[in-house]
Amino acid sequence: MLRAVFIFLGLLVLTLLAWVWITLNWSYSEGERAGYVQKLSRKGWLCKTWEGEIAMVTMPGAIPDRFEFSVRDDAIAAKINAMAGQRVVLVYAQHKFVPSKCFGETEYFVTDVHAMTEHPVSPAPAVAPPLASPAAEAVPPTR
Image 1: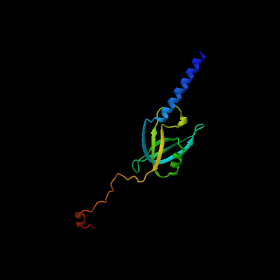
Image 2: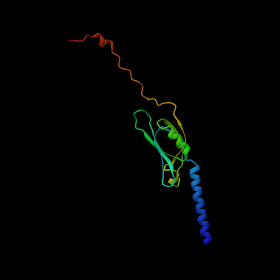
Image 3: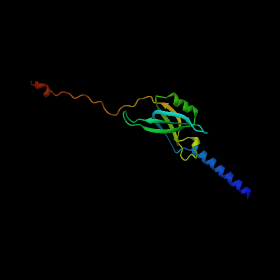
Image 4: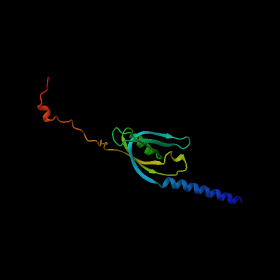
């Protein structure tokens, strides 16, 4: 009976370890997000992770969307901190169902970062001032 309990507990621990390994090594989606880093801080009581957010601006004057992310690698966090104030592109992998906040508070884990080389351009064309019509110039002002 005691042996069956130990076998059951051993299988349970192996299952949990396999689940953690699968969720951290198999990504649900991958992509890039561009924006300005709003914050990046090392957080946690026991398990310290880098947590941050960027403001993604689609066009000048628009309300920015926030993208919250986690960084597990100290070297990547140092690169993000070095690019403070610049527009950056974060390369991320989304990992769903990670069983603990110990690995990161979000499901988006940044794997690389690089600075943007081009600046966003406003999609609105420049508006020229209205031209005076020849008929308006021909009429003399009245007194």
